Length: 343
Image 1 (cartoon, one colour):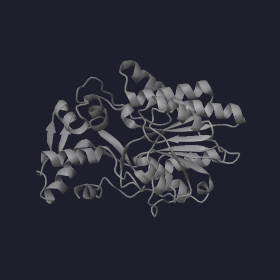
Image 2 (cartoon, one colour):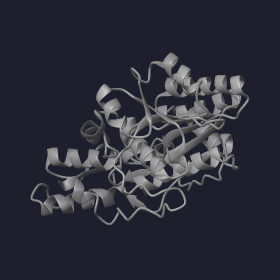
Image 3 (cartoon, one colour):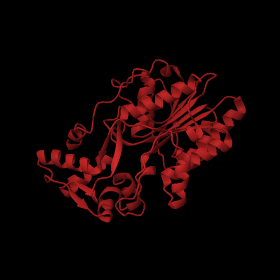
Image 4 (tube, helix red, strand yellow):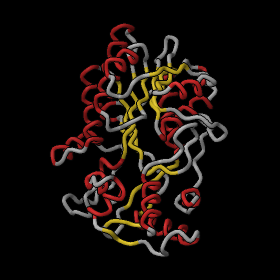
């Protein structure tokens, strides 16, 4: 497949060293939402998506974390049957809108990892409220680890409605920046970040937000093994016969391997369980990267590999935002510009 070759191009360097918190390379499972019950320690909960399953793989590969009682929230009986072979307790749920159920489940755990959807605000609120109930019942600290992304910080360089040259660090006051950007123009994933922090502070739940950049590599989980951005560009290129980018394509993003993102989740979890100091709340925003590329770099490589396979034209083309958004995200220009064009 062209997609497999794209994963091998020079953007895709090898994942980093995971020796401190378990190396997931030999495992084949991943998860979307997971609950881990820790005896007289925090109990935890995950969610199923591309990175979420790799998080579960990493946790189960770690000798210390693998001993924790884990509950995985899943949506189908076939998924439950698959996970039953692992040292986790599968728990069926309807969907992320079943907030009463999510609150109830979170109220029986001390740690929740929500890696399924960084945009879904009601589920995040439900988990945090459930954890707050848990804290009132047990008197123990509770922890909520939330999946987010760096499109929250992207500019609007194609439409030129918002541009800036700032380079971000997780040492910055990220909450204040996101709050400011929300005042200019709401963006659902950024809105979720602000909501998570504010509700966590209100209910005395420690929150940790992982802002993933462009994620590459094959997921180590059993179900979804592909990320979103590059596969989206590849599929659209195959349909069109030519790779595309928007504007000048010079917006630059950081990137990281899916196993390294999973290792970051596991590292935070391990520190929480061991009751070590971990920044939370306003200080609890975490960026992860080990390289960077432009969207033009990606389009050029898709074109190169596709042309070698006889599937694509040798050069990519610049396409207007309206047209490219139809090919990539069903006409959502806002998401397209922030997620596949921005700096």
